[in-house]
Image (cartoon, rainbow, N blue to C red; front, side, top):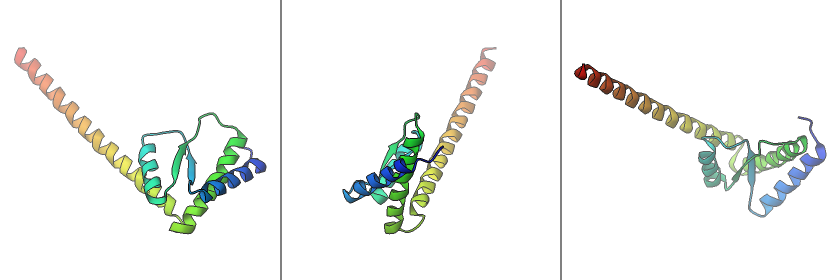
Length: 126
């Protein structure tokens, strides 16, 4: 990405206006299985709305987002302490991973039980 200073400054300005208006936001990558959980956690903990980015970006749009997010993160850190956003993000990602693993283990167990039942049915029919 080529950094575009004017777009970065525009992002900083927009973030400051949104923060003053009581509507801080963070722009983040495309939606994933963790997006809703992260959005809920950021809203509950910091009052910050999570905005999913488009997959189609330009150097200017990425520079804008970089300025916007840097300003919002600095705001969050000034109120909640340095690293607070990362701590919440990490906790959400760990929880999503834990839920996925638990669901995966349950799916594997169900599949194994179904395969055993099918084998038993085939054995009795033979």
